Amino acid sequence: MKSQHSIPESLARVLPAHIGVDGSGALTIGGCSVPELTAEHGSPLFIFDEQNLRETMRRYRDGLAERWPNSRVCFASKSLPIIAAYAIAQAEGISVDVAGEGELQLALEAGVDPSRIVLHGNAKSAAEIELARSMGVGLIVVDNETDIEMIAAYGGPRQDVLIRILPGIETDTHPSIQTGGAGSKFGLPFDEALQLIEQLNGHPNVRVRGVHVHIGSQILDIDPFVEALGIIANAGEFDIYNVGGGLGVNYSDDDVAPEIEDYLDAVCGAAAKVLPEGAQLLVEPGRSLVARSGVTAYRVRNIKRSHATFVAVDGGMSEQMNIALTDDQYTAVVADRVTDPPSTTAQLVGRQCESGDLLVDQAKLQDPKQGDTIVIAGTGAYGYTFVNNYNGALHPAVVFCRDGVANLAVRRQTMTEYLAPHEPALEIDWSAP
Image (cartoon, rainbow, N blue to C red; front, side, top):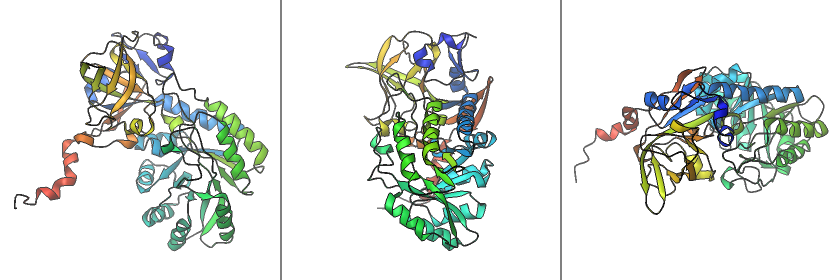
């Protein structure tokens, strides 16, 4: 096997850490041939470098602990809501934040310690609150007064909560993933948050342990995180300060994301100046924790050369809705010839009947051919999250690769499962006028 250094640096910085090239010149991830994986599990296919994921978790966990001993890293599981990811987080000593009953059930099924779970959501249901309370979820992030009413209605021992503060910070990211601006649906404006905290003093069912803030996602500038921490520090002295997540990653050569260590230096440096001594500091990385570890593999269905060159693959918006939502510019590579120089500039498009089904604009590809396997790098975050059945597409499988072994984490959806929700309609005679 050739070394990773055979792969151009521009690709190596966006592909998973543990990559290589096999004897045929094909890309390997975690010691597994990408074309062989698609042959075995079908395509599209989500492929994860398990060791890369674990190492990133440790960078966050150990780096934060070194800078702020009383701290916790919470995996923002909306970025990759599969049991394998929850179980690995638990094994690596990472807490988990969930949004909604489904994510909470996945975390519990994976064996995550309920006391290390943080429940989020701007429109929680009574069922979610009941499940969280019955299972002993450690923290509930309160977004509004209705959350308090539902917690109180359940009764039982006092529930530890964090109050989510809306800081009014506009970040340089796509509008769909800005969460801290003045018009956001999340959290309470500063003055309203302070009023709620005062009202909850001595509440029989709720104990305010601290405050929470989250300003957005795919943020490539560290300063807004420091600013947000300063704002919630002004809310008063608490046991816990949760600064959320949102650190961006490199999807292409145009992105220059801060290193995790630089982010932690800035946040912990600011915390040392503004937080009470001994307070607990929480961070909630999602995208920056899982994105680089994962890729999506496709097979080329056809190549059309007309007013432009179009390379069409067997997936698209059905498993990369996030690309259409945020306009992020990803990097693609022909996995069969990963070390060859790019020879073709093409529109890498999906099979869905939508003009917005553009996976990579002006993709630089290595002489693409029908039947080739093409990989889109950096899709470990939010790719699987937004999987859908557009145009009857079946949900892809997910494999985790490590030391040459590929473990199936999520099996491919079957046509029987796709048809199952429509079964009641099959029993009705629709032919009558």
